[in-house]
Length: 207
Image (cartoon, rainbow, N blue to C red; front, side, top):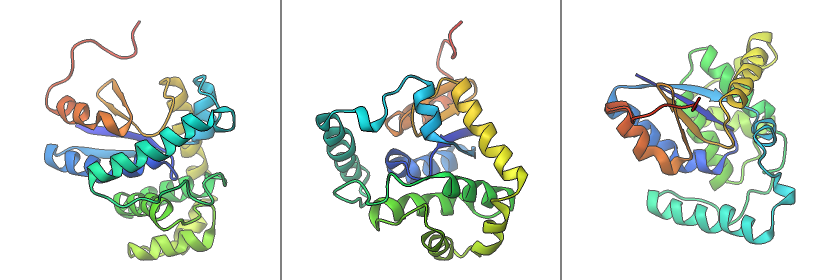
């Protein structure tokens, strides 16, 4: 079994669910297939409202209360505000993860540390300097990855992941595909664990 893991390198909810995802996969003997995607293309394609158009009440709840509550529940640290550089571009970080995967680096550790650094240390995942520090924290030499991010293979994979996410009707990060079933949001990880043991009745997408 494998889990297709669609997410963006700056996603709060991917961070909140990362350790639990890895625990579930290990327990089930499942492989995680990382699919970093361009969330800022995927969301409007599904009809989701841009952050700039959302109410303060929505942002306060979704990016404050929900995050702090889930962090407490998962027993992991998190900032008490949206990271300073959260609105910066996300292509470099996403492609760096793809480069790590394509060069047989430990993408699980790198991905989790990148998400943690952004949401705990206020790291800027658009900054090459910050990304180098993140790589070094998990004992990965960043220089080969920075060369690889510019290769056509990495760029094509990033575009492919994004197109797949749009075609699947994903509307946020993270989303997990087990078999042909989609589970949106880290709060569905219990369903992911169950699906790895016994698929749910019905199918997705619905005809």
